[in-house]
Every structure is written in C-alpha cells, then in structure tokens.
Image 1 (tube, one colour):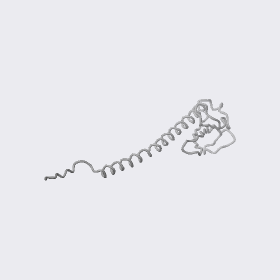
Image 2: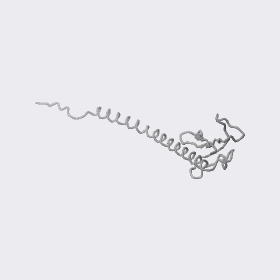
Image 3: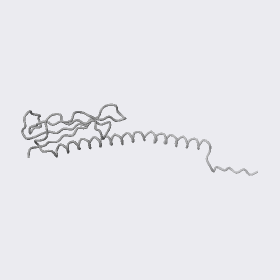
Amino acid sequence: MNIKNNNRGFSLLELITAFSILGLVTIALLQAFPFGLAANREAENNSVASYLAQQKIEELGSVAYSDIEVGIIEPKNSVVTHPGFQRQSEVSYVDGNMTEIASDLGLKKISTTIYYTSPQSPAEKIYNLTTLVSKK
C-alpha cells in the first residue's frame, strides 16, 4: 500500500493562531478610534473658541477708538450661537510697556476670553485673544 503524505492546507492549530493574532490586532485598532475622535473633537472646540474670540475682537476693532468703552464690556455669558461656550470681553488702558493704567495715553488693550468644556475633560478650558487699538 502506498500512503501519500499530503501537507497541503492548514492545521487547526495554525488557524486558531492566525485568528487569535487577527483578533488582537483588530481590538487594538478599534481602541485607537476613540482617541482619534477625542482629538478631533478637541481640535473642533479650539477652532470654535478661536472663531468666537476673533469675532468679538473684530467687532470691537471696527468701532472708533473713542467709542470703545473701558472695563468689562461683555460679562462672562453663554454664546447663543454656540451652546457650551461662554465669552467675556474686557478693555483697559495700557502704556507702551503693556502695563494697565488708569488714564488714556492713546492705547487700549482688548482682551476676549472664551470658556468651554470638552467631553473628555470636565475641567474648564480657556482660550484668550488680546489685541491693541491706538488713537489714529
């Protein structure tokens, strides 16, 4: 009798090993997705905060120097168009060294602060944008 030794194909042990490795790789890749989504959401929140701050800075910068009031001109309050974001704007007199002063030397500092939270971190995040406006 002639017995042929046919080694074509995979043994059960090889298949179990291959599927185990494939399963581990799949689990590792699936665990990376939430981190990517969280980073994407954080970048989106930073962009919105930047937009809201820039919007207020542009609004105040388009007004004549003498019409920009000094003090807290917008108290910390929710932004209607973007739930979850709060904005506060403040204007102060400064000198050439950026030191806040009580009298007008022809230079005002406009500072807008955006407050928000992200789903990944319960701590409040702060985005601040500041610019200077001078008499013309």
